[in-house]
Amino acid sequence: MLEGGHIPGAVASQVDLLRYRASKQPDDRAFVFLSDRGIEEAQLTFAELCRTAHGLAAALLRRARAGDRAILLFPQGLDFVVAFLGCMVAGLIPVPLMIPRRTSLRDSSHAIIADCSPRLVLTTQAVATTRPDVIERFKGADREWMFLPIGADEGDGDIPGPGADDIAYLQYTSGSTSNPKGVMVSHGNLLAHSEMTRIALGTTRASTFASWVPHYHDLGLILNILHPLHVGSLCVLMAPVSFMERPLGWLRAIHAYRAEVTTAPNFAFDLCVQRFRPEPMRGLDLSCWKVALNGAEPVRADTLDRFAATFGPYGFSAQTLYPAYGLAEATLVVTASRRGAGSVTRKVSRAALQKGQVMAPATPQDAQTLVGCGTALKGVRIAIVDPDACRRLGPDMVGEVWVNGPSVTKGYWQNAGASAAAFAGRMAGESPDAWLRTGDLGFVAASGELFITGRIKDLIIIRGMNHYPQDIENTVQGVDPALRPNCGAAFTIADAEGREKFIVVQEVERTYRRQIAVSELIDSIREAVVNEHEINPDEIFLIRPGALPKTTSGKVQRNLTRALWQDGLLDVLEP
Image (cartoon, rainbow, N blue to C red; front, side, top):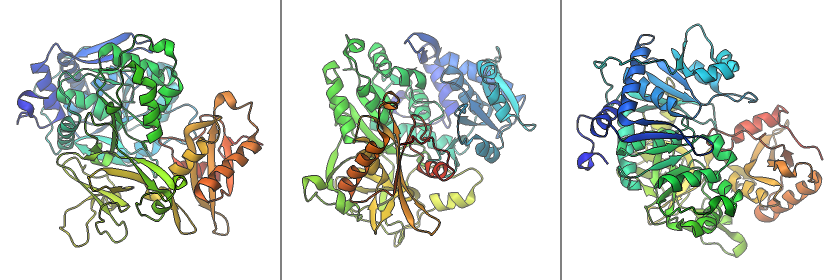
C-alpha cells in the first residue's frame, strides 16, 4: 500500500500515482513480460515506466490535443502499458481494443471507431508489418497512426495532470448482450476502486501478481496493471496465447516469482485441470499463492473443487480460491470473497429458482450448487431489486443487482439514453440516490453474500418457467467428453409465426470431430436436457471447434450466436 496506508492528498489521478511510484520506488521492477517459454523478454522499473510514458506523451501532444481519443491496438506486452499511461499523461483518452482476428465473422471495431471518433491509433511496428489487414481496417482520413517504439524523447515536465473527475479511459463493454458501449471511467473511479480492492485482497508492495489476462479486458487492465501500480508491487505478465497453449506455464510463473495474487475467468481454472500432467508440475510449490480471483464469467463449484483437488498436492490451498463479481460500469469489482476464507457454496432448489425463489432442494435431483461472489467492497452498496416495480427485495429473493458507490462510472460515451437507463435507477419508496442497474440476476443471503443466477436478457422463459441458459449449457457439456466445456449457447428465437423455439448450439472437441456420431450425440443431449430441466429443445446443433462467438474475456455471446444462426453462418456439423 502507499505510505501511511493511504493515498497522499496530492494524488488525484493515475498520472500522479505513476509519478509518486517513480519518486518513491525508482529502481523497483514494476512489470516483467515473459515469453511463451517463461523467459524474461522485457522489464520496466517504476522510474523507467514514468520516463517512457512522459516521453510518449510529448510525442502524442504534437499530434493531438487533451481529450482526443486514442485507440490502442497492441499484442500483450509492455508497449501497451507505456502507451496506456502515456495517453493519460498527455490528457488523451485511451481506448484499449483487441487486435481483430483475421477470420472474425463479425467484428465490433467498426462500431467502436464510429462511436468514439479517435484522433490516433497506436500500435507496434511489428503489428504494422505482420498485419497490414489491421492497418487497412482502421485507416481513416481523420486519424493518424503511431507505431511504438517511437525513439527517445524526454518529454515536457510541465504537462498538466488530469483531475479526479477527468475521463481516464473508455472501456468498451464486451457486447455479450448488446452492441458495445464506451464506459467512461474517471481517474477518481480508478483510485477509489484500487483502494477498495487493496483492502479486500489484502495486497501490499510485496504482493507479486502473475497474469495472462488480455490488457484490453478490464480484468487484465485494472487488476493486473493499475492495481499493482497502486500498491507498488511487481506484476509478471504473459501472453494469452501462451496460456492457452501451455496453461501450466501460468502456474510455473506463479512458482518462479512467488506470486501472491492472480486473476482469471472460470474457464482458465478448468483448462489447467484438463491439461494437467505430473511431469511439468515436478518441483512446483504453489504455497505462495494467496488470492486466486475467479471472475468475469459464472463461477462453478465443480471447477473450484477440481482445481483444488488437482493442485492441492503442489501446495495450493482451497482457501486461496477467491470468487468475485463485477462489471465495467462499476470500474470492475463490486463484491469479493474474504481473503483466506475460500469459496462459499449453497445448494438450492432448481425448481424454486425457476420461479425466482431461493429454497432448499426438495430432492437430490432438484439440487443445484451456486457459488457465492463475496460481499460488497468497502464503500459500495448493493441491493437486489424487482426490475419491474423497482422495489428492494429481501434476503434470498431473486432480482436485479443494483450498485451504488464511488467506483460506479460516469456513464456511456455520448449515449445519454443508455446511460439514463443503466445509471439512473431509482428505488421506489427510498431516497432519490441513483443506482447502477447491472442487468444481472441474483440474490443476497442473510450473511450479505451475493449469488449470481443469470442475466435478465439471457433468461429462457418456457411455459412461464425461468431457465438460466448457463445451467442448460452445463448439462449439455456434461453429456460426453466430445463436447467442449464453456463452449455452448442456449437461447430462444421467434419463428415466422411468432412462436418461441428453444435452440441449443454446442462446439465439439477438435480431437473428437472425426469420431463422433452426430445424430446419436444430439439424441443424448436432448435426453439429458429433458431429464434435468424438463424442457425439450426444438433444435440442437453441433458446431466445429472455435465457431462459437465469445467476448474477449471468454463469455459466450448468446445474442450474436442467435444472429449467426439466423443468418446461416454457423459452421454446423452434418449428421
